Amino acid sequence: METKILNALKWSGLGFLEPLIKLIQGKEKDKNIRLVLRQIVVPVLSVFIFLGVCNFGASYLYNKERDIKIEKTRSVQGDAAAAQMAECIDSGDLSCKPNSLPSPADVKQGAISLWNDHKMISEKKSAFKEKTAAINKQRKEQGLKAITYTGRPSFVDQIITSLKTVFAGFLLAAFFAIPVGIVLGLSETLRSSINWIIQILKPVSPVVWLLLVSMVVKTVMANSDSDKAFIISFISVGFCSMWATLVNTTMGVSSVNPDYINVSKVLRLSVFSNIFKVILPASIPMIFTGLRITLSVAWMVLIAIELLAQSPGLGSFVWEEFQNGANDSNAKIIVAMFVIGFIGFMLDRVMMFIQKLISFEAK
Image (cartoon, rainbow, N blue to C red; front, side, top):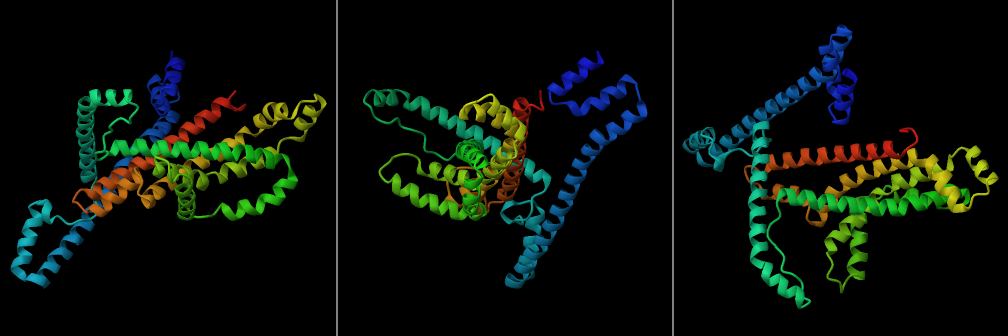
């Protein structure tokens, strides 16, 4: 019974509760108490400590910004105006609230505000879709483009746009880097002759790739109605992030056990059979390590590229909130920061899960 419960916890993602279950069962209490403290109590305690530190820092910066604002008002308008400013700030009036680092409570309110904004925009989209359904049906019959909603995207829409862009860039990077890495790994001559190009292009900044890709795409697709901003963004992401996969694939293929190669020669396998039945299975751990790094890099550079290119997505959202300067803008930026970090963490977990499914070590 205990084994079934533990297996169910692991499959449900609640494996960290295993020590607690064992403690309840009453076996090896001292050892299980230490496990509970290490795996449950300490992590939960660290969350509260983190929130406490953030709250303390936010309060300190708020009070400092408050004093600066009051003193500035006193130096320009006098003591009476400074007293009014202090009274206004202490009353909680948003019009005179210091614009400093938000507290955890402010961040929570910012998250609620973003979610309410998403629901409002979703309702507008639904109403627009119903309103234009008949017209779009006629336009489709006439071979014309449908009328689409062009209003402001919500925060959730920005997340979805960023995920689409990063996956497109990741697939482009994998599509290019894995085949090229296999070829370079199989040929020492090619590897030594092309290595200098890889070492030069690998550290190039996302800004430079964005500019180069923009030049090419805008020229090649000058007469196209396609979404150029999306194409520029995902190609730039692909070029910035593909190097880890390329290098790891090359190293993985070149370091395959020579005995495996000799066996394939004895069996007289064709080139493609040798690659797919011997080389790739033996190189999967290295290739997936590169893919995990590539996906992480792609997610990081995507935010910068969206910010620079002003294309829809989380990067653009953060920049717009920074320029907006509203009282809740800082809180929304912090919400975006945690969302970006959480998505990056989940993407890495997904890649690790896929690697375990298809690698020999998992079997």
